[in-house]
Length: 365
Image (cartoon, rainbow, N blue to C red; front, side, top):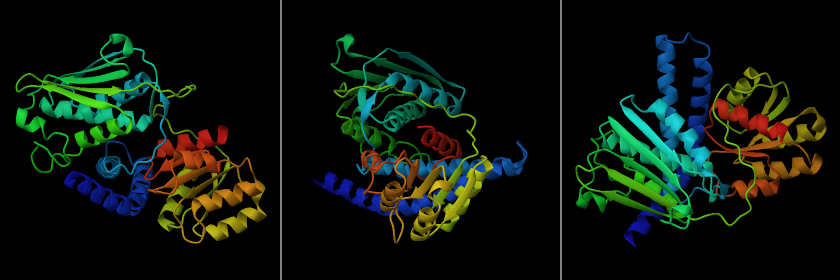
């Protein structure tokens, strides 16, 4: 009972601050990324800006982990093949972990499970980061993926093993508790494994731990197979930011975000008009409905919400590509956004490369 009350309290607090906090982080991340392109690589200013970007990403990830743990994450679950998502995540991990940490993977071909790529990315990142810390940032992490043909489980099994110090019996009972950590102060939030447990539960699975002091640890995630119809799946790797020349209408009541999005998209070659008043934006659109190839709008705004703006704009021009942005909203998730006719739902703060990719998907979809 106390654990449930604690989780609900954290969830209420997280939902309350997530929207405002992510809105604060978005212009910090956007302006820092743009400034990185304007200064010489290797310069002190470039290094300092890189640290700002890194810190902003950590803050964003912490908010997301708290939302996931408190079950306020509302991403739509769709049939997903885990192998390509895990491969892409391991590529990112190899860059971020010390060279003294080796990653060996054995990834079998498996049927799809119901999940969101972000969920799987978060599970793999958290388990592998935890494994690296357990080894003192030196050793081998072994990642394996098996389907039901292994005979061990009727679904898909994802295992992350390390050659670290192992976990004491006393700590085994507490490792999934929020804020529990054996790291020194300032070196860990204690949310990593709690988030993994919350995600696995949301996906209808379970997590098992096999560990003993001095013998390393194996964390195994068991997920049930999807019963939905599977569609073609593409995993988009981060790379060069896609560019274009289309005309985009941006609406966000936060002037700092509106100006940053306008500048960022103009740098990518687009022609951009920005509004901070949703009613004024709608009036402008009613008079110039054919002038834009894409609309990028915030969700939480006074006067007209993003969802209401989407409804009225699509009533005027039914095939209009629209991207809906949100720092956090309990009113709109992936399923509701699709019902509205939104092409892309993005969470703020979003990095330049991912916003650029979302713009191209919306325009070309």
